[in-house]
Length: 362
Ligand SMILES: [Zn+2]
Image 1 (cartoon, rainbow, N blue to C red):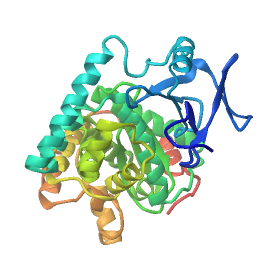
Image 2 (tube, rainbow, N blue to C red; image 1 turned 180 degrees about the horizontal axis):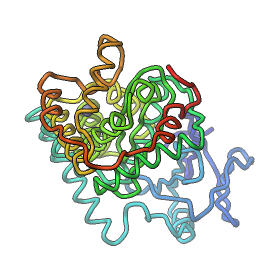
Image 3 (cartoon, protein in one colour; image 1 turned 45 degrees about the horizontal axis):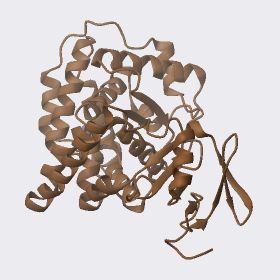
Image 4 (cartoon, rainbow, N blue to C red; image 1 turned 180 degrees about the vertical axis):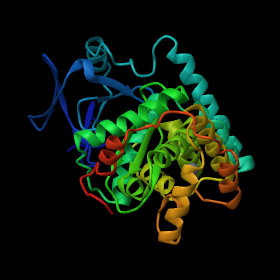
């Protein structure tokens, strides 16, 4: 180890905050050595630029641990690497990417000013639609890890038939909503009946919610409601809101995924409730989607009522993260109509979905 700041090459291995003075060898891959020992080999094609101060080339590798970084202060070494890492700027600084990044930074900077002047909620509203999709997906990945921490990491070993039924349901809703295939949904095994929409386009449904449902329309209505939150980017807004200024500053000045502020913010996101306005808008989305499929919009409300009855609103149930109000229920009933579409699942598919995590009946 030598003095900080003066080493031409510094390597962070991604498992600790420790900085290692490193040497580089340009062979078939980029070889990173510390104290004469090869510590990592990064494929040139996987190397990407990270934000850094002027005069420093800071890079990461897509096939290395996510937090591993390499900092190069030596101009010749930086030039050598730049000539070999053909995809160095692929993720954000393509020809048209530059304008996008500049615009994004200005928007983020403007938003910080807004935070100072008006507080966070307004800034969150302005900023959420501007977050680049790739960045949002990375945030979604961190959030998904936190979901497992908060709700219990019991992987659902989904039965093939159960998974097929779930995929059919999700595909039907996704197609009707006009989402592309980047929107995914999975089932997680948890005793807490809930469903969540994550940044980056992912809906997670807990198997205990499916277990409490009486028919596929109830599950469909909930997924449709979560798709509504995705459509309106309520999760991103919530994340910015909950992360507050530290999150905004992180957005502006560097890559923050994996930082403690990020973990705190994403955890708050999945345990806090949406605003009444966001709930109403997501309900509207669900009602319209169910009507499009010719299925009853109030099924979701009936499921939520059943959960309230049994759980008494305790814990992180769907009621606590999606607060239920009388007018929401009244609205779902009012919009209900005669069922005229085909069932979203066959009886056999519904039974398979009920047992998706192999727990049988609850
Ligand atoms: Zn909701």
